[in-house]
Image 1 (cartoon, helix red, strand yellow):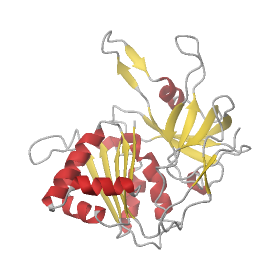
Image 2 (image 1 turned 180 degrees about the horizontal axis):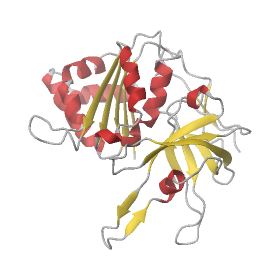
Image 3 (image 1 turned 120 degrees about the vertical axis):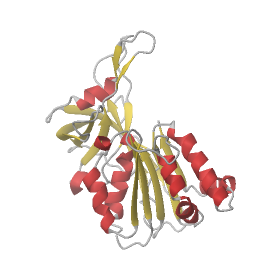
Image 4 (image 1 turned 30 degrees about the vertical axis):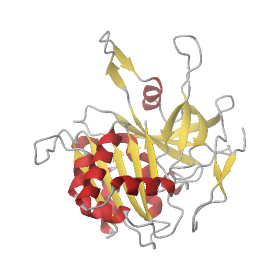
Length: 304
């Protein structure tokens, strides 16, 4: 185990901890965690299998912040006989633990199954299938945490625009739990754009919808296989952003707004195009806005 940390400094930082935990446990000396709960998040009609997995790491010095990732070391070796490399997963619980239970974290994992484009043979993701097949009581090798840029805003009353697809919802689940419990008195707005394939893929649906009781919270979903745009195209998150262009750009122009994006790498292009079009519609320059967000570290992207 190592004690690597990073100092966190930000303009008017009021919520920043003294340090950020980084790589407290590494592949050559992983921590041990026990599976204490599992539940399937996707509905029976979904072709996808996404599991919510809760790990207990009592007895270790592991700790993490909202927005960080955990490393998992799947057992066994690859085709060359070498140990499998670690896989990183965004942590789906807030730093205080799953359900507020200390020394726990949760992961949101999609079982990866696909056909080899050359042979047609079925392939299965090594780590995702290992995790999805775990049982309560099983032990897992845990590394990390990693990540020091995809964290909650450090200033009070910040606005958050969160854009997620699929299991990219994981860190935002953590953000929302903290935002509407520990930071409920703050006045910032929270916008969540969440894209999925089917209605049965609405991960954490009841939980995400429960925050709609707060006036500051706006939940907008895009269900690509079930909804169409006015032009008859599949509905993706960038189309929903376009529908709310005025509100989104007005918010981005405010100096206390942070933009987060988490999900498959392919989502980024369409979203950037939508934001560019939205800015033009408002008579603004997206290039200038984007550069300002990046310079002030208010543009936070985690794509894979």
